[in-house]
Image (cartoon, rainbow, N blue to C red; front, side, top):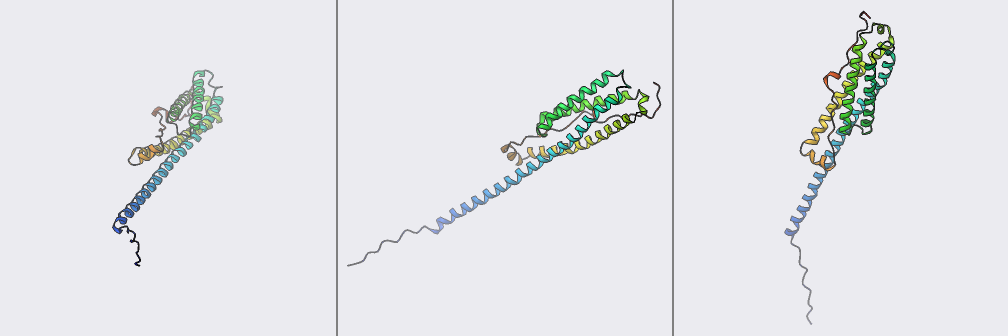
Length: 221
């Protein structure tokens, strides 16, 4: 009796397997490259955003310092400037508005463009009111002997300089960050993860520096 053997199983052609393997490896490599690029780009955007937040924090510190100095200055000079009630009240109102705006912007960590813009406007108004107060103070030569008024004026001018430096550093960080959000292909990641542009901290030229009061000059009352 003859023994029959089953037919051999059909072998998968080697030439048919090779393209599939190459395609699979290629797909994995492409996904790996895309994933790596996505991670690097995302981390870069986060890093830039953190720099913006840190820059805003530095401005915030100096603004709070100015807010603390203003009431002391008003309290020191109001006795000698009893006839300048309107000027002193304007400074007080401007300070109150600036404090409120600072709290809103600080709560957002500098990430709310509208709040940052409102803060810049309020601080510009405060700086302008302080500038007018400094000019009016020149009419009162008795203040030249007031050591507290002199010290507070010097501290305010120093604080304005610090605010200017902090503002420049912040605005530089914002420009770099916003540029990254706008250029291809980073903008794809920015839109995917909802990164939003930051606002510049800008004030008008007239409010960027306080006038220096010369208390040493003798003036007629």
